[in-house]
Image (cartoon, rainbow, N blue to C red; front, side, top):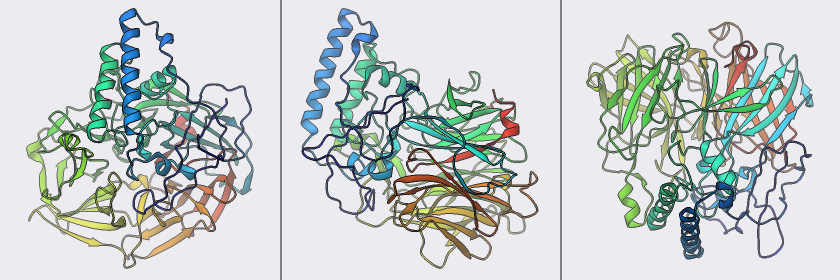
Length: 581
């Protein structure tokens, strides 16, 4: 396996340093980044001791490998010429910080190559005996350098796997071989539009037209999904699934050595016909998997469905929404599904005006829908307004019978669309409790912490999802968007304990692995926190394992490759791997 990471500049070659803020603060424009990652070459040594990539040219189109007929060859030449003209027209147009590759994939967001299994990693401290399995974490890792705008969420999915057995650890990382990635690898360049970074204004419309023209001419296949599978991971019905909300899940397989293989796009044996969001909810008691699917073009804009423990899909409940809405996450309780209908929406007509189609709709009132898990009709939903509420992630929800309320815990983000659109205001992500009274159909909302603290990606004890929980483990996003540590939050008292990585170390999602019985041990916080941590000064990465009870570091696994900051993960126990499909 070898990787070619290249960057073209007008002078000396230097690695693009991480910006202090991917979205909010003014930056100096960096040189154009070239990043070409070749995969599936496993017999060459890795060379990743330095962040500075080697220099090479982006590979030219390889249409000849497609065995094109005369018409297709002519069409390919014409479409390629039109694309080059579009790129030339755009080259002097300034990009917003939310679409500028020199911002979005700078520093430790810069992509890496695949890494085959590296065994017997150095471990400082002692890995607890109870940890036996594989910790996997997803993230965005573009295979090719962007030819136009690029948002962090646009990158190809790459999963990092750390297998732990008898106190020993191995590491591997692999691209999820999506239909999109396979076709772009064959062509030698990106041709699929990037939903957030590229689809802005008239040039975004032009890129869509070029893409569909390639599809009509048989130069690309756009019928088997366009997703990147870079966000979520869930282990369900003996399958590891990688997800992004723009496609079906992709099934991965963990090998006996701890490597990763892509099985393929997974439609639950022909049952799933639409996309599925990246945060399905696995009920720890019933073992059912609950999911949503949203569409930005056709009604119904939102659907709910669930899968039985053996993978049988329920009938879909079509949920009427007036406008297609960004719904990245939702929540479940013991008996209900909590559906956020918030103010970040899709308005494709905005592209005609030269804007992003992902916009904040100030005239819309946010609301939460409470629907029985076994509902068959949307009429069973109780909608309750919750003005000015935008939670990108919901950490948990539960029922409070004595008050006839559903309690929802999430991080309320403002400005709501600042992840997608450049804003002057500093982003805030406030841990919030929302209480929904099912009798009066009213809601209340309160910030849970006295101190202002940006708390984003994280989780509660997954064995108590949908039931009342006392603790949440959440990333401290400071300085935004970097993660300087995590907080253990007491949801009853509002007290917090901080674990800070220190110096120039930053991380991502704190993953909580419960220990002991199915209920997570005698206490809810019995378990361990897994954190990917990168030292920006030493340019090294490691996995830290922290005791969740006292926040003491138990072990540090030194990783052989840089691990870019990423998204969400899960842990697959060794006993589950035995039955893996």
